[in-house]
Image 1 (cartoon, rainbow, N blue to C red):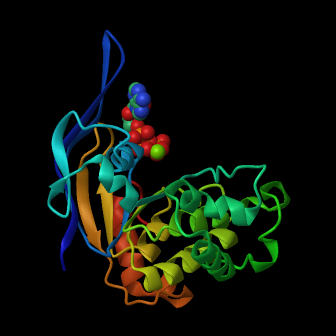
Image 2 (cartoon, rainbow, N blue to C red; image 1 turned 180 degrees about the vertical axis):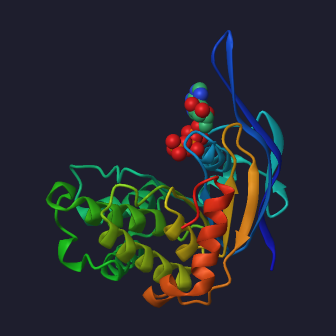
Amino acid sequence: MTTLLSLEGIKKTYWPASNQTITALGKIDLEVQDREFITIVGPSGCGKTTILKLISGVLKPTKGRILVEGIPLQNSHRQLLGMVFQQPALLPWRTVLDNVLLPCEVKGQDMHKARALAEELLGLVGLNNFINRNPRELSYGMQQRVSICRALISDPRILLMDEPFAALDAITRFEISRLLLEIWSVKKNTVLFVTHNIQEAVFLADRVVVMTPRPGRIASIVDVPLPRPRTEKHLYDPSFSSCAETIHQLLGLNAL
Ligand SMILES: Nc1ncnc2c1ncn2[C@@H]1O[C@H](COP(=O)(O)OP(=O)(O)OP(=O)(O)O)[C@@H](O)[C@H]1O
Ligand SMILES: [Mg+2]
């Protein structure tokens, strides 16, 4: 295994007003292996989104450094990244297909190839019959699947996902989680996935990063020993419950 991403002694303080400081992140040290699926859980306000913003380069750490394959994070690393947020954020005047193709247009890629790949991805997430529709004709869950395809179209080495399924009902959420794992098993991106849902965190991850309340630090990293591919039956596996219980306890919640 090779380390793709290193967060070394990362601290982040915000200065929302001249007389006020908010220390969002205490001190974060984390090594993410190439092709690893990491989920991050923690109380609201503990700095999960801040971590993703630091990795994306949108924010700079107050202290510490971020390395990608041993090289300090720089603008050129942005092309390695794909991002999915809680809101699908699709452009309403473009069709589903054209929304997925947007990153390829921006990068000036071969649109013939890109179109074939976009259609393949949309097929994988069950949207083959919707490629020429407008986003507003799609349900919220379908729109989120489109935004996942848009993030995956440029085959990012690192996929940053910030509570992407938070607004979905439980059944759709589980279905999309499975789809994501199916795609990931083929593409093998390195994924950092923030969620408030402990079951989702365990189901998806190789390792779950559990954070403390603000200022966020890593309370513990829980290894998930479940084999892949993950299926519904793993939800009833004793090691699934044991991981979930450990995370509950680390978060100071009552055990299951
Ligand atoms: N731009 C900003 N200016 C000032 N403070 C900020 C800013 N962004 C975030 N914060 C503060 O930093 C802390 C961490 O915020 P962040 O959004 O990273 O938390 P989070 O773990 O993602 O929370 P949630 O689970 O609610 O999404 C919070 O206390 C928040 O108020
Ligand atoms: Mg957040």
